[in-house]
Length: 239
Ligand code: MN
Image (cartoon, rainbow, N blue to C red):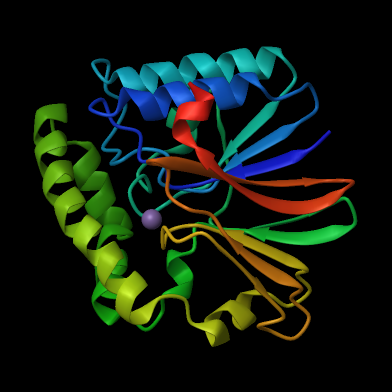
């Protein structure tokens, strides 16, 4: 049994190689393994879309994983925060809270997308407050799919530049990490798209693992009885 964590796949109908790599990755998991997808699985999610082949592929591969005894979980990112509990279930994923604390192999883990740690980027935090507004979300869900797609495409462009902005100028604020990491040994997050392992930044926290975005390479975190490891491999090796 092992625990796998991935983030920032940004699956999109225009990038079928990403979906294919995920299919191969998920098919390689063994019964009793756990897969945690900690946000930005989709490039932008505005609702279940019958024409979206990436969504169909996810539902299919996660369904197979489930039959194979692999549990697949999902935590919201900033691009797929609209995915509801029911929509996650239809994709054969179990939706978890934004900050998910768990213990595996005697390690206390925190899994979260990571945008919450970029607390100095006020522009981004203001955007987050807007898109997390429940009334706005309720209104948005009632728009026709074509309208939601158009708005999604616009937000996606803004969000992409926002992510670059914060990774270069602001990035993760260590004090904010500390606020959420009492009684945590290992923190795993994504969002900033730059792979990295940081030791002893915060008292008590042994390591912070940052997953890279999927593109030329894919990255994943693995925890089993041997310990914790962060991997980066060419996407092409998971065809
Ligand atoms: Mn993100």
